[in-house]
Length: 381
Image (cartoon, rainbow, N blue to C red):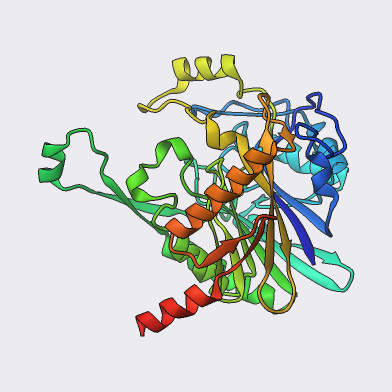
């Protein structure tokens, strides 16, 4: 089964760049049409009603976005994300109805926690893929419960560590943030994956998690502390691929045992919409900001991304990255050659910095560096 995977998607019916993939600047939407199934993270509810949530960034886009997704080639989207209930449960119900009408499959939202946690099964020829969607970047009250609609959640516990002597010497230094996935939620996810894997060929898990790039101290690295242990446990439970999003930039990938972990798949398309635009950012800061943070996302890493080509078969998955750029309106375009090369180079460097034994070829093929991996294992013994 060949998957085409992209990161965050916001569609509002904007005029799109056109092209035939022959020159830098041509639209990259045609990249979605390769493979058996295209998967993305729908980063916005599709609705024209509901009460705005009291949060800094609350977004919504027209229900017509569902047919636009189908037209681009999306077959499956994750819904468990931090903007799902920006306009309440009714807003997400509108989203589900619109996606169903357009023939775009989805997972991660439900009228109860049982429904929200349910996998969506997709069949391609004689092969089945079961798809879960969970959110760790969870606004208060967004998670589904036994008697309340919402999204599927794996909650995260946090604590803060600081060295008072060091902070006296370097005032303003942020504390180190320790984080761990909430054990009951992890066990629930593991049980669901184990059970589902018995009935299906492959299992994919979308995780909305991690820290957007402006807010994570360099000293803590690209990943929050809970991410790698959680991903590996879900692979151990039977997942074949973890698809991460929320940081709005590319993060490393990891081949772990039989599985593949995509820690962050970046952005694919991000239209201006209700609640997301220069004017709305100012209004949000004036009326909803309750912490000393600003929406500082629109910077270099935001505009550099990739399309992930994943092959699932018996044995380890395969992976190839096709770099893309986002233009000034956050529309996906084919990159200039030097930008494509720099995206792959920075991605490879990030994998090395995390200690992952990977090689990234010039054509975007990502493979295990078995020689270094085995050498490291011998040294450890």
